Length: 173
Length: 105
Image (cartoon, rainbow over all chains, first blue to last red):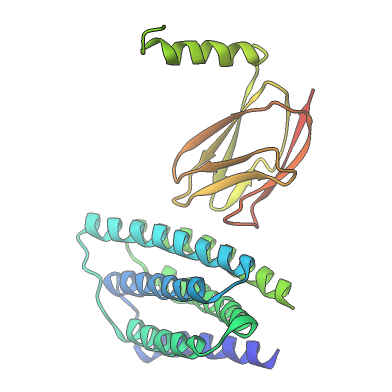
């Protein structure tokens, strides 16, 4: 319990502090970059899980993550192309990527049931953090209506992922 | 031997013959990971038309194993109901998406 909670707090505070560290409100090119990066991170985590897990619920969950995040990111790419916006790297994206790389390395050392638990706990925490960043920072600051709408769709999808992850986590106990 | 172009015609006729005529078509949407309406009543021979408005793939998967329909993003998929019963179904990819189909004989 403590491990899961601390993982959640770490993930939330990392996203929050990274967003705050930036001070100014993110611009649309930055928001697009953050959202896309967040998707890439979850796809990488899922691909790692697919190579490591023997649990069929985790495998199905990870496959769902790859399918959905790839679909959302494809929409995001199509949209930035259409709007002629170039996603712009920024501190939040860099912090996200750095933390994700650390998490991949940490999970990479675990095996079997230990890995399964840690992966799902991180998925719950990660989706919570992303959902909260979408709700409090990214969606309110998006100025383009189509970008805002895609982020809102993303939020609904990721809230579903969070519940799905919680469900899988509960089934592992 | 039938000419090749006849095959779909014959297939359509055969399919048509096996299904009671004048079945209704009932539309169910999947949008923002919600199935609406979540409860639908139909009859054997009716056609269910699932409209996937999401950018994601969904499935309509009967818990009793009767059917498992996959719908690609932004596509509509139909199913002609063959069996009566109360069928709970969900999306395999997004298990939060649940609904019930009551099929009268």
